[in-house]
Every structure is written in C-alpha cells, then in structure tokens.
Length: 279
Image 1 (tube, rainbow, N blue to C red):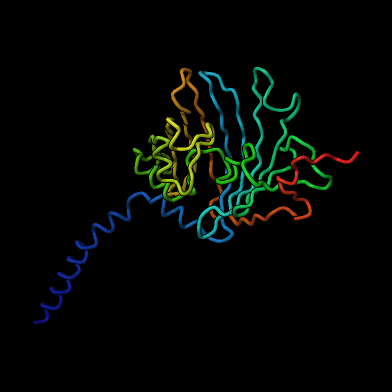
Image 2: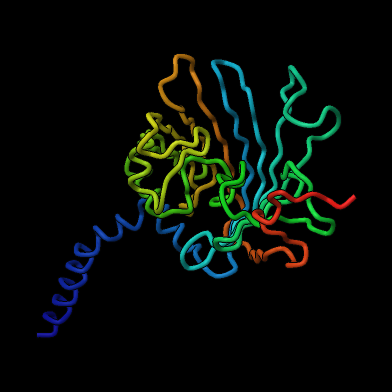
C-alpha cells in the first residue's frame, strides 16, 4: 500500500518535467534586445556612445564627423543627451576642421524638448556672457544630433524601431553575443518611428526619400546593443551617394544626470536675429 504514494510522486515529477521543458528551452535562447533595452529605462540611468559618420560620393569620403555622447534614460526612454561633435579633416586636403592642430569641437545638450548648442556653432555675433543658444527651430546639425545623440538613421533607443530592425534581420551567434543583419527603406522606417522621421543625411522625410538603410547590429550576452554600423543610401542619384555610421555603446546602466546650462549663460535663438554688438 505504501508503494502507491511513491509512484504517484514519481509520476507527478515526470509530468512536471515534461510540462516545463518548452519554457526551459525558451529561457535558454538568446535574450530579447528589446526587453533588455526597456530594462534600462530607469531614472538617472544611461549609456555612453562613440560614433564616426562619413558621407561618400562614389569611393571618396567628402565629409565626416566624430561624436561622443552620454544619454540619460527615464521611464519613457532617452530623456536627455550631452554630446560633443567635431569634423574629421580630410587627409588629402586638410579640410573639415581647422587649418592646423586638432579640429574644433562643439557641444549640444538636450533636456526633454529643450535643445542647447554652444555659441561657437552660431555664425553671427553673440552678446558677452552668453555661452549657450537655446534652439527654437531647426539649427544646423543640432536638429539631427539632439534626439538620439548621433547621426544614426536607426534609433536604437526607440523600442518600436529596434523591434522592427530585429524582425527584418538575419541573426547569427558571434563571439560575445549575436549579430543581426538587415535592410529597411526610409519609408518603412517612417512607419515604425515615433513622431516625424527625417533622414539625418538627406534631410528628407520618409515619404519623400527613396533611400534605404542596411545595418549590422551586435548585441552582448545580456542582449544590449554594443555596436551598430549602418549604410544609408540617400536616394537614386546617378552617382553613388551614401553615408556610413559606426556607433559603439558602452557603460549601459551607468548613473547619468544631465542638466540644462545655467540660465544666465543662455540666449534664445530668436533673440539673436538682427543682433548687432555695441561698438
């Protein structure tokens, strides 16, 4: 009589093992990069990036930029950025920066919807004591740099965009994680991006652009993005015009607090219209 309880327990254990086998298999698969990203969306938590972007006309690079940044997250995603960018001189001509020495660097800060850029980027005179200009409308490169702290046509901080990229990718295991490869048109990108999508290199909206984006995206063992390399074709011109952007992501989860510049050092962009310094 005592053998029946033991047999019943054995049957229950076997049944439980069979029932939980699929879940264990699913848990043993690669981590979901979208879930990994969302877990980073916490107050005063962020990531650091280093980026190189080049625009090519045929086989020759005509302009290039280097960008380093810190991105601060909140529950909704990237809520603030602090970045420094500079032109990369053309080795053949010496253009793209200062004539000698290290090229000048420029800084951009975004806190929420407010975007500030240093006065060195403004072509006209600025009142004494003012070090920052708050952007009221499109202002040069800051329009494209401020949202995600770079020139990537793929916003990896937008879960909808990242999910669409992964869905359109072929993935394979690599040392340290996984590699995702795929392609998407600007029109498709506009359909999955929150708000109004504008290609950072052509300046065209998703509806008007005929270009496409190809990518190689690496993730680590934790599923977080470690590197993104994109090739962005800028339309159907007779000559081959495209941009290549290479971004590396480090320090996920680091503590980040980005604040606006001191109010007494800031001037509104519109207030500079027609400004003439006193002689």
